[in-house]
Length: 177
Image (cartoon, rainbow, N blue to C red; front, side):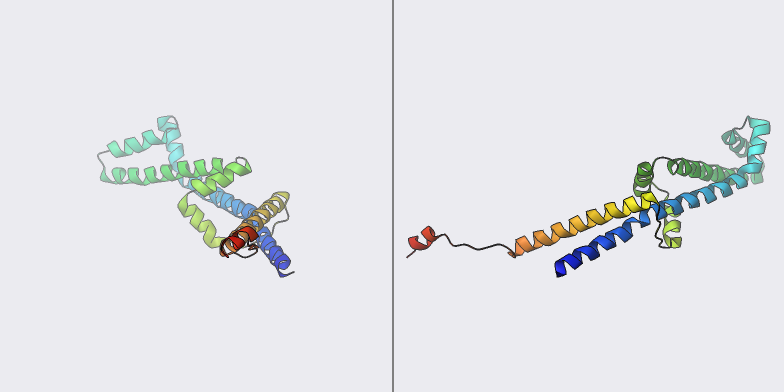
């Protein structure tokens, strides 16, 4: 009876962990959107200048600033270059987070921006979504966790000799008499 309740607890824990996945993905995606909007706002004036003088090429604008004899302009080249680099990174993150759910998960697990990921972890609040994808994630994680715990317990029990029956074969017993 205790094993049955323990299985239910493990399953429930897996369910609660699993329903967090879509919420975390959604939070990360919203964070990327917010940073991307802020980045675009910061670059808007430079984009207008690049549109007027460099056919929308921000890299040409940065190169022009770097080639200037004015020290202030050269210094601004580094600042604008950082803004452009950040905008490109956020655009790539935004595109990755607007793909199918499985590419979003792979992206978060393998190549998400560490700073944005840490910000999301720090600000994340646990939530129970009742959306179909959250239910699917919850059930999937619950089954996998329950299966893994069951395998570990069975393997440990088998290794330690619990549940095995020790039979002495009578022919061997007679042989030693």
